[in-house]
Every structure is written in C-alpha cells, then in structure tokens.
Length: 180
Image 1 (cartoon, rainbow, N blue to C red):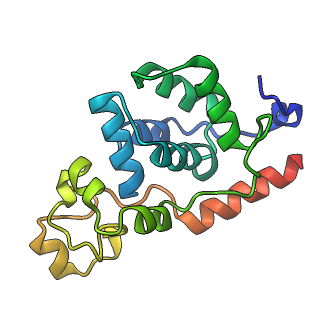
Image 2 (cartoon, helix red, strand yellow; image 1 turned 45 degrees about the vertical axis):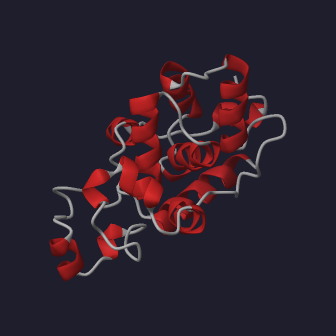
C-alpha cells in the first residue's frame, strides 16, 4: 500500500501496451530503452537510469508503480524487497520521503546530461549505434539523411516515442493535482 494514503484514490492508467513497450525497451526514448534492455540482459540497471525509467513508467505513462516494482524485483539481481518498494514509492511521489509529485524526469535532458556522447545508448540500443551523438537522444528529430546513413527507419527499426514528454508531464501534473 502507498505510504501516503491520498494515493489510494490515484487514477492510474491501464496501459498494458505501454507497459510492455517499457519492459521491452521500446518506448522511443533511448535512455529509457537502454536501461530496460540492460536490465533484461544483465539483471542490473544504473541507479540514475533506474530513476529515469521508473519516473517514465509512473509519470509519463501513469502506470501503477507496483507494475514497475514487480518487474524490477523479478529482473534485478540485486533486488531487495524493501529498497525496491520504497524506491518505487519515492519516484511515484507517494513514499515516506518521496520526491515531490511535480518532479518528472525528462528522459531527453537526463540523457544529454549524463550520456552526452550516447555511449550507454549505443551499447544497449545497437540499432542507434551509427547515429551521430547530436541526434542520439532524440532520433525522431534526426534529418532523413542522418537516419538513412545510420540505417534507421523510424517506426520500423526504432520506435517513435510512445508518448510526448511535454503532454505526458502536463497530464501527470493534472492527475497529481487531483489528490493534492
């Protein structure tokens, strides 16, 4: 149960297709996808990417934090029930010392800040490995010639984002305002 009781009434989305895209590293956000693919292949995901991927699930997609907590617990080799549960509640904004509900990680700016050259992305999302670093964080904005040179066909070899960051952020804030 959420530590913050207000969240018992929170309207989470059903989003089964989005949940599967997140689990499979097919969200269209390279940092999120890299983290989810690393998790599946190795049982590990860097802490910064854990926070970004978790925030994406609960705030961009409005999918219940328990789905993410269960997936992480099942796939992490360092899974710890208490840390995992409390970490997910922290990211969702409903834990004991939770991040403020309005803190919504932007997966693009996080990627640009912490993986400027895209080395992490290129390792875990190999279909983007030939894309210049200037486009690696948002391949859907790359010009046609850069995509062609990198053998990328948007929506065929790599998905477009399953949700627009700005619209998702606004939707999440509206949902959180309802229980504030």
